[in-house]
Length: 177
Image (cartoon, rainbow, N blue to C red; front, side, top):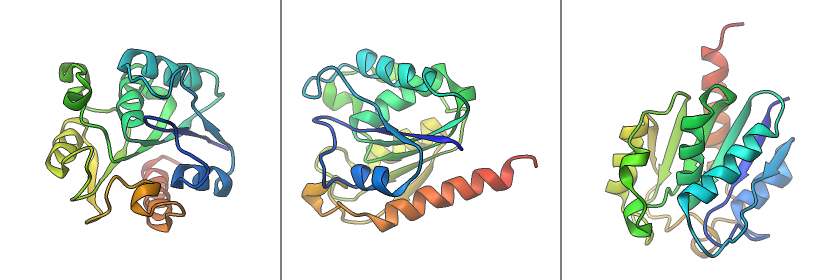
């Protein structure tokens, strides 16, 4: 059974966040932990994601939120053969965190979906669409959904679960039997 890595963003995802709900609903999940949830440093955060990938036997899925998306994408560039697919929700805008954008301007070697909101206070929909294009990700606009976190009403998030299941089904259809 494939492992699912949950990769939270800044300040982690609390007990009522949709990522925590995913952990309770999906088998074989592991949460990536950062040394400091209040300080973003892309290289440090990506290293923690790479370590989590390396600790898993077999292929895995990534479910990331906000700054965790940037860390996951960066780690994914280094470990593409290990990742079956990634759900990247409300990806942080690297410019907002003074991270060098050139480090993120590659195409991902695995299927991915970027989920964005039209009124996210942390990333403009146009920026999320831009990064989805660079990464070769499918882009899904979920309308006015804020930062797609607890503050915007996304604890239990069936739409997100459905998007993840659709990604997994699409990858399964494309994989040789």
